[in-house]
Image (cartoon, rainbow, N blue to C red; front, side, top):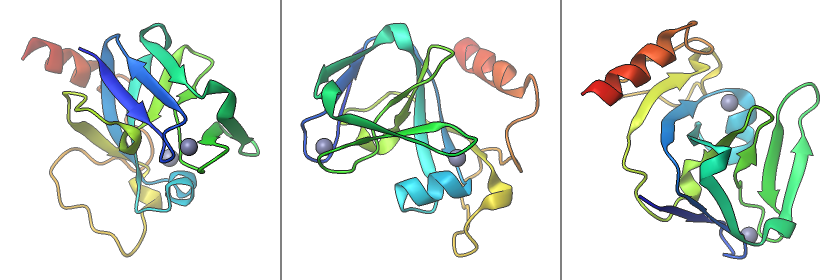
Length: 145
Ligand SMILES: [Zn+2]
Ligand SMILES: [Zn+2]
């Protein structure tokens, strides 16, 4: 399955041809700021299944002091995929143009949640990140079912 995505101006585009790991919602203050929204939603994939199709030269990086890089389109300001040092790619789910075929698995950093937003779905919520081993188990279960 091929998953396509692009920024608002369309100059940056990409595709995912490899396996997808998960989608999560992150309520930390950085994701809220950078998305301008109640939370950020991210599709996680492996770097070897990810390709830029266009506009890779337009990808700008903001290094959050003491934290992760945040990537954006230097033309339109959209959040775009971030390639991590551990060969994972974190894709802002709102940039996707096609259905990734999976649903979000958890809410993280709920301890930093916006006070004006109430989570109304039933997927697990974690104060910060999921406890050690939880994600591996949850993903293994998804593969089984
Ligand atoms: Zn753009
Ligand atoms: Zn976050």
